[in-house]
Length: 85
Image (tube, one colour):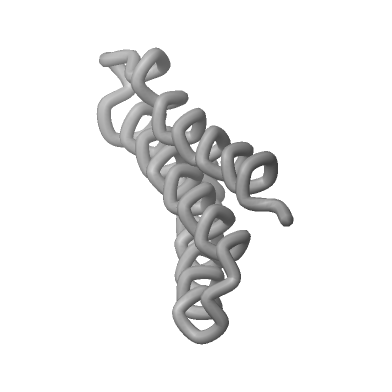
C-alpha cells in the first residue's frame, strides 16, 4: 500500500510540473518556470523515495533523496526573491 502512495505522489508532482511548464511556454510568466522546476525536483524526490523504500530497502538513499527536493525548492526560492518585480 505504501508503494502505491509513493507512486501516486510522484505522478501527481509530475502532472503538476507538466502543467506548470506548459503554462510557462504559453505565457512566459517566469514564476511558472520556477514553480515547474520545483515540482520536477519534488517528482525526483518522490521517485527516489519509492526506490529507497520499496525497490531496494536494504540500501539507504536518505542522504541522496533530499537533494532533488532541495534543488527544486532553491529554484523556487530564487524565482520568488529575485524574479519578482
